[in-house]
Image (cartoon, rainbow, N blue to C red; front, side):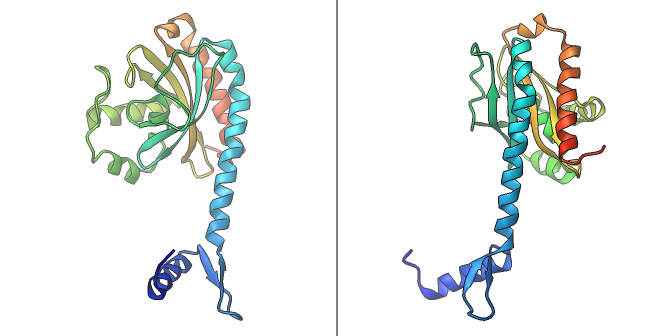
Length: 219
């Protein structure tokens, strides 16, 4: 890498301090540390639960005129990690791999409601960007919404990220009660009026509760 020895020594010491490397006592050489093993298992478990979520929710994409989204979160944003539809999706805001704000998406609010208070406080230090006329842009409004989500287990996006787009979402919780990911059914251009929204909520909750149980959540 073209770095001098003292710089490399400092980098290696830092990596060893955090467990990414460890030094072999007999040879003084370095090998990969336990932290990388833990991170690898975390990624593996996330991929597994994503695939299980995709399998369990495939029938919802077939039954309703909706697109199923599976998303996780990182640094105050959601990341779409999978998307299921019947081949007639009209939704442009959710390509796999794309990031979006948490406060104006169903999956984002579903996860934000179950993240630690310190995470929410840090997120709310920044202005809540207005994407449509219906986007929640005040701290009080968002906190009231998160309280309701914790009561019902369901988050709604009411044309808050894209005009004409409504979503019903629910989180998949880990053993400690924090969200691993969230799943939503998205209905563009009034299609939500064609379904029984309460039935959709019940079916989605059935699946997210099953997935949460597989992750060890017993709440």
